[in-house]
Amino acid sequence: MKNLVTIEWMFFGVGRLAAAAARKGATLHLLTDHRAIYSYDLERTGTGGLVVHDVDTRDPDAVTAALEAIGEVAGVIGPVEKTDMLTLDVIARLGLRGPAAEAVRLVRDKRRLRAHLADAGLSKGAGVLADPATARWDELTAAVGSPFVVKDTAGSSSQNVWLIRSQEEFDGLRGTLRDAHPTGRLMAESYFVGPLYSAETLSWHGDTRLLGISGRIMSPEPICREEALAFPVAFPAATRDEIAEWITGVLDSVGYSDGFAHTEFILTDSGFEVVEINPRIPGGPCGEHMSEVLGADLYEAMVEMALDIRPGMLDRPPAPTGGTASVPLYAPRTGVFAGIEGLDRLDAHQGDVVLHPTRSPGQTVHTVRDQSAAVAILSAGGDTAELALLNALSATRALHVAIDPA
Image 1 (cartoon, rainbow, N blue to C red):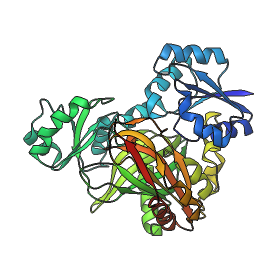
Image 2: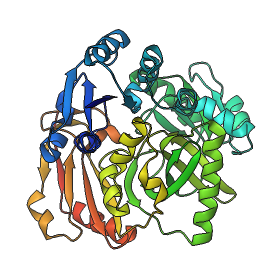
Image 3: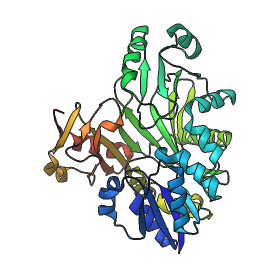
Image 4: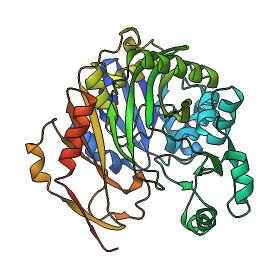
């Protein structure tokens, strides 16, 4: 058996990934410093073919030692945001097969990516590093326009993102930042107005296929939180072809030639604008539901690429059968998560509703500004993405997230 490794993973899908590896004659090794976060997923999908290693995945020496103890490693699957830079460093240190390192480094640095897209003529937006303690409102608005977004250059899950619409909001941000812990530096960038979508793509040696487009519902301003996702959005054929051509050019420009990409973009009144490029499939349970809708296993494609095999799904035109939607259940306020009321009513709803917990009762919710406030994700299907979304939104009406005082 060949050995494949992932250094951490997303909340969901590692069991399916291990099963896909086993079908290809490989054993998947998960290196993690918190195996409990995968317990729900593995209870659903099983642990067959998966070997879990308890490792401090913030320590490159510990990760290197764990990989050397495994023996010969055929490839590394990833990266995920929590460990992406460490994964790239370890891959280079050990000479293992992995993602295009320079492309991943570029897209994960939001300031570099914004500058690159502008220089390549792929964005009308601008971005500058901005320390709110010293930056001036008039200088930032002159550079990126007003309103603008302040964000973490290495952030994810809508964490450490603020929409700034006035001098007063900018001044207030200084106090907010005392409790923020950005992963990277802070930047200010242009705020694009329009609906948010994601182009879901698969690339192999520069050959890119648009698998479909996800649509998002966002929270009211100024909070930048995702409230729902539906896939695949039914664009007119001409628009879909235009998006496919555009996203292929974007990925070629950044050098991302191999792997899945989940590229968020705004459809503005003057064209498409990239928000961010994620070198992975969408988060949450989206991977498994997209696989069902597309009739192709995304996890099997990841395994094939890690084994240096052209993914079979790249040569089969996407033929969606139905749609899928996911709605996060957010805590209404900060405090201690006590549970979800109304679960007994879910079976009465259409769409094969499934509730995927992301928090356990007793855990503290520290903020409701971003996706870390989610206690679960509710998924539903339908004959179209629109119907799936309506099924999911209908089912959430029966539920109430109970929060006790901290």
